[in-house]
Image (cartoon, rainbow, N blue to C red):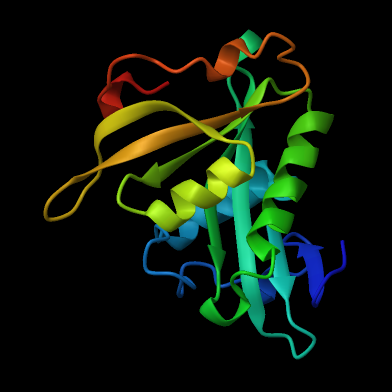
Length: 177
């Protein structure tokens, strides 16, 4: 992929990836190095990094494929874009790349979790075709804990779009598969 800089699989250029050292956005969850390395080892195709011509990290996305049967899906674990590269379509490009990989893997949907308070992100995901599938009570720990929206977008395998029919009641993290 090419646009406003360089996009590469993180597997090809992982030394430049901000593995746990920092995130580009305070709302992006930060994980330990072993977490990133586990994802990289199991799902390298789901790691994408966008670099400016000067090598600066503009943004990245990491995810995975999981589930069985009609619950086989792509999952966005983290998406972050540096402030100076926002509102130019970079997040949409990264998401499209993850969705393309998920289509190739014949997943039924792509899902992600986002803080209920992160209205900018919720609106962006809606613009990209995602809908709120369910609310997860106290998904994010903090002071106070915060709810998440589990947002989903059906892929072509889900011809009837059963995977995105919203649940009518909230769930707790222990109820999330």
